[in-house]
Amino acid sequence: MRQYTGIYTSLIALFMAGCATKAEKKEDLKTLPVAKLIAKDTVLHRAYVADIQAVQNVEIRARVNGFLDKIYVDEGQEVKKGQLLFGINDAEYRAELSRAKAALSSLTAESKSAALELERVKLLTDKKVIAASELEVATAKVAAAKARIEEAQSAVANAEMRLSFTSIRAPFDGIIDRIPLKSGSLITEGTLLTTVSDNREVYAYFNVSETEYLHYQKNLANGTARSNQVELELADGSTYSQPGKIETMESEFEENTGSIAFRARFPNPSKLLKHGASGKVKLTSEMDSAVIIPQKAVFEMQDKNYVFVVDQSGMVKMKNFIPETRFAHFYIVQSGLKPGDKIVTEGVRNIRDGMQITPRSVAMDSLLSL
Picture 1 (cartoon, one colour):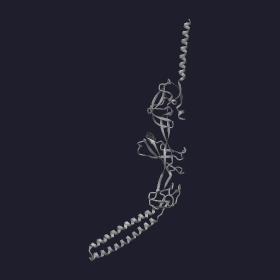
Picture 2 (cartoon, one colour):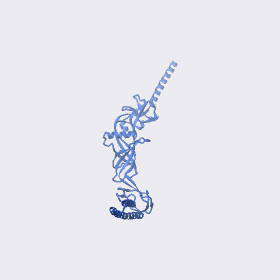
Picture 3 (cartoon, helix red, strand yellow):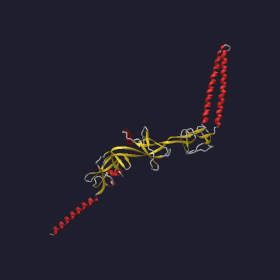
Picture 4 (cartoon, helix red, strand yellow):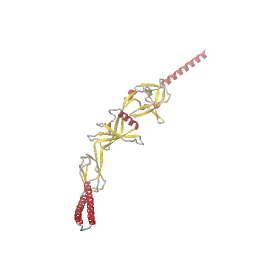
């Protein structure tokens, strides 16, 4: 009887141990947030680093040699088209113009003399006093005198033009940039004097990927009202008050980056934006029935993207998907996942394929609103 009692005691102990083991295994299951994927119309806001340039930005350079006599403007000053900016000593060029005009006067006188001689020779030729060849010589002299006059007139025009280059004027309304030289400086042809920027409006250049380019074109073709409207985020993180508009884009994708450059125009009535400034262009696009998943739910293996899909029993299974684009902390799915799939949204680094978990349901809308 004691022998049977020991057997019963052993069996009860084994049974209790088995129950304890099962209970411990159940307690060991990880509790992880799981969300059911949904399809949702969404508006994407993408930000791109932008290079801001004035609509007109021109370097003002000297076109003749000489000493910089006068500077009529100051750095940062607003100027009008045709306003005098710099004066180069013009004594040499005035003398050159005087010599050219004197040469022209002399040749004009010679031409008149040759014309009178031609009339005299023609009269004598008609009376057969001299040979006809004399008339040909006199005619040739008149033609040569006219040619020399045209050459002298060209020299006068060139001298006048070079003299005009000593007065440097603004090519358009704008703002003066830095002036590196001072009065009295010796300058040569091509010397940079300053830069004039017309920044009443500015261009913002930014690059987008081929996928995003295609989204933009689809929205444009569908007539989305704001498909070509953009905002500008300034360097301090604030949003520029004036909205911009995409005007054009380059004709080719860059081979190295696979991106294409867009150009947007922004009005700049307060002159806040300057040539060479930086910022971010925010482009808005709309997507219908997009499947969106959190970035925390995704992990990579061999350059492929995966999530853990959860079945009804709580078992997780790796599943590959192809992202269409990424924004903020989310991916938009192109293929591989569909509405209704349940995925683990956090803690994917701590589980493995085929593992059992305890799902904790979370609403996908609540994740998207974060």
